[in-house]
Length: 487
Ligand code: AMP
Ligand code: MG
Image (cartoon, rainbow, N blue to C red; front, side, top):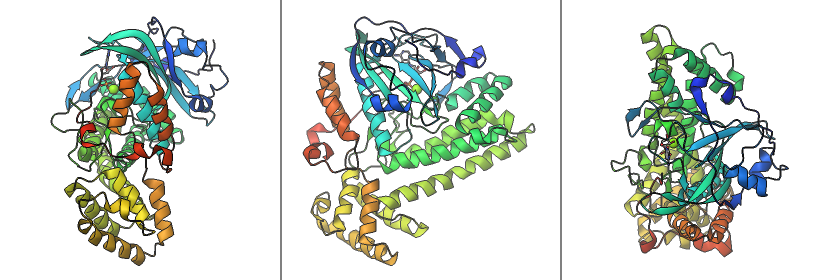
């Protein structure tokens, strides 16, 4: 089978990647194929939902036009620098230019070992495949920049983790797989020539309008900073915790990438972390902006030599760019959270009300998603479900009164507030306990719960009366305390 790949990364110098083919698997079976995404990619008419697609997305067939590679990168993992990581269980088949004119990578995850596998097997267990499919597609439906899921297949082979698990192969689509760690790799080797090539490549791919800029590295750095500032604010407005914000998982495109131990908050708690490996809470919910800035500082460090021939001048440029992060984050955060309480065009004076509300959610361990969603109902006097989130109405009614009069002072009508809130406060998020259910069933070969949850999460802002149970917070015995990378 031939697919309309148009590959550019493989035309970069050989230091950027290794050529290799995926390793075949024994007995692949379909789990899911994303027809809408295939259409967007211009692959809708290729017949990929049939046998050929299955053999491509499990790695048994390399389609014509693909030029499979594993890319190299470095990264700071939990603060410690690893000079060479690379795609240890991912293989980039190639790039396609979609119907929207956007170039995207098509990558297999779990398709066998690569020169960067170190002691890993290059494979994926089924659980993390289902989790990434569900959560990344839910994030897309929520409007968050993210990598996408094109396919998931069951490999028919076991993988050996703490237990023996069924294996799976996941097909990920991204605007690119360039990471902060890709830049760190060449910088750590003092490979200025390739760093420059990489910078120009990244700019051409993510900011084509800026090609030919006087200082490409500075333009790129500023672009990544503003994309990350907006991304992390967006995550926080939905209660999303990435869980493993290492620099190799920080995308240059500004997409959410690498859904390992990620999770959504149930009860609001800024110190919340789920990841089993994040004992210190480095990547806790409320620390994500700090860590994004830390990661961006690593990018600035990697690009330093390209910012100015004089080091002090280069540092000054880097610092000026990094200084913009805080304002950009705060602006995006305020815009997102103001919308969550019904304010479409925020002023600085709206922040106190938002912070006070969050403080009350924290003090009373209230479910983040339900509190904001049901707040919209109170606009028409339907306060019951909102008040039921709190231990007693008295703890929240003074805030509600203050909020109502604030909206009046700001000249925001009840209708306008309600509409703004319903468009920014989802009913359905991928709740951890629901994902666990899906994974348990999937391990037994039952993908019905996966399909159902996936469909619900495609319309996260709509009331779906038949699916009400999926909007609920977990019962105490259902609460998921920890998530695992599953690598
Ligand atoms: P991640 O935690 O998924 O971002 O992965 C961190 C690094 O470990 C990357 O270089 C991955 O390619 C590598 N890695 C993770 N899992 C495996 C595996 N099963 N086999 C080989 N390499 C892996
Ligand atoms: Mg990674």
